[in-house]
Image 1 (spheres, rainbow, N blue to C red):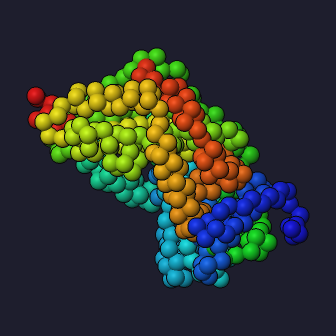
Image 2: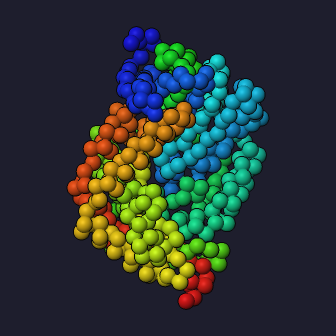
Length: 446
């Protein structure tokens, strides 16, 4: 492919889609360090632009929890070119849609518009990468919005409060133990200078990934990226992401959370677990299949079949694992017991199911179904333009590369029963777990 920009790096990988076609994924790096990924999807004359910053809640300064999410809100306040918080209004007037989100590992902004509006989207996004204008009035107004969001989504939801406490118990040293939205007292204490310092350090092209998916040609996108993002000044302070790591956990931890708003009590256990790592995703693939075998697909899973169908002690059960994180995170399982079944009984039957799996192995038909399900989910997600952009953006901001993303389906299909059992024996160690009971006040008093 002709290098029309004379810049550094160009690569292409091919990824299967639901139509059994090939989606070309082309990667480029601008001179200022910004990574550009173009995913061709010519089914409709629309395009999705996403800018992903390699910074999330786990990168915040100690005592400034919530600043990454807070800055996400502030990014819509305006620049000299697009003032007065009209960013989203301009996009809507051009027939588009936009939003943003923050996780522990990244912050992302997106617009979905007609293809001919892509230059405008790039111009506006590049403008606010370094040109954001903030004052105390804007800052205080948005701080109230963030606190209201926390009150609505977390403080009013016992399950969310319970999840915060479990994360804090799981991660004693790593910042994954701090909620993305922040601890209330720390959020209230955030200042305009805190926001500006965080913005000027992390919001820079050499800390960003531009993902463009849609009815576009790579060379044309690269030319636009060079035109609009190329002049943006990089941040010289950007360094490798060094975070405090979690020390070996040597003793199981337990907690009970009681709230009279709880209508469906449940027991949940999480274990420290490795993440997907570039060039070595095999263990994460085994854990992904272990989660599906144990708790995917409802009553067709091992937990569902034994606890909901055979023993009839559970209303619901499941297991979960992603692996798509910058640092090791967790593998988890849960059981929602039927009325009259105690939390202790539910936990005991959960343990018995795990013991059964390790003793008897994985049923071949269940493993084949899990592989087919995960492959289908992967393909269906790729059938969405937004899904494609998110798939690559999330991977590239958590330490993977385009080749890792392309290889993932084949790595999953290559996992064997022995791989799954080996991963289970290594990860499902009660000494590195947190077990939590979420209960109403009646269950607590019994």
